[in-house]
Length: 225
Length: 114
Image (cartoon, rainbow over all chains, first blue to last red; front, side, top):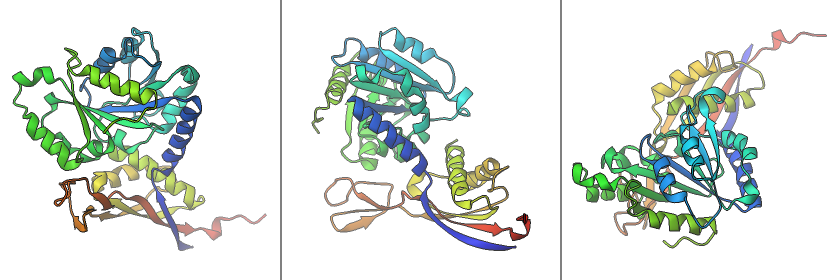
């Protein structure tokens, strides 16, 4: 018996990337723009979707990712948009993120040809979702002021992975010690110049700008810097 | 949790290259920007690798420091902002996540002659 050295030089996430590319091809063939929405648990992704999807001027579908339950999909279904729930617990080992294969498994449940825009609400987690492409065209993260202004410095991987940061729960600012200027300074330190929108999914403040962003990407118009 | 997901992907990658042979060493290059805790990754590769060709394999990690570049200068995080122009620097190194090589056992004696 002897030992052999085998050169591999392969990115560990190549296999996921291959499936993500297949998803992306399917989305492009159907003319659908896909947005991967990521955040920590409780940042307000589902509430933001509830606030922003009703009466949107593009045809929307939603993929809900959670470890367990259909609570979020049930909420989104009230808006009369196509929704499919992926629970990672029973089928995918309780994974803390969606990967390309999980999203691929959900595609037959969505009428892609009848949609302009699909929002994928990822599992709440500030690390893993940033690692796994799912075939999306845009990556957006929701960050709430209740999480503290140091989060960009603690989770640079996530804050660097997105092109737009939605700063949610700004209605809470008067009640918190959160220093918004310092937060934005920290955000610019890890992702200089990244687009940001200040919103309150609860009061609706700033949500129109987010809706306009969704319509623009849903129509595949250039998003102004 | 992060390391658990990545450990599964590592074991999958190694299995594709091992050709069924038992793996003794997995050598990886991991960039500092990947926010991986080496001890945690070792533990999970050991767990996920049980019952596969990776069972008992030693994980050797080379952590690649993060370097950013812009305006002719290079620097290290935490700041990703160019000290000269204020723009975002380009990542020169630090986002690698590669299985560089593996060491496998050739078990000729086990191949039955028919």
